[in-house]
Image (cartoon, rainbow, N blue to C red; front, side, top):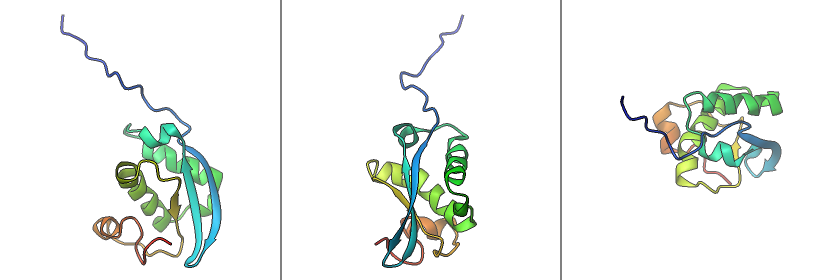
Length: 114
């Protein structure tokens, strides 16, 4: 009988998003998305989509292509580069760009984060 290998890392379970809050910055409105501890370590195939659905459920005005792209960038890269970043900030005024441009802009196309 083949050996069964199990992971010692428990699966991350929802909820992935603790809260969302709109704030005003010098550049415009910004939606601060605060992930839960589970959201910071989730790696399942559908976890990013599930987390985005939580964001939209908390604030339906987040539903836009540009905001979704920023969220995806934060989900993939911010969790690695800045795992303890208090919030992921999404701005509706940022342009929709290619994936490469999004990464090059560190998830902030159209100007640096304030």
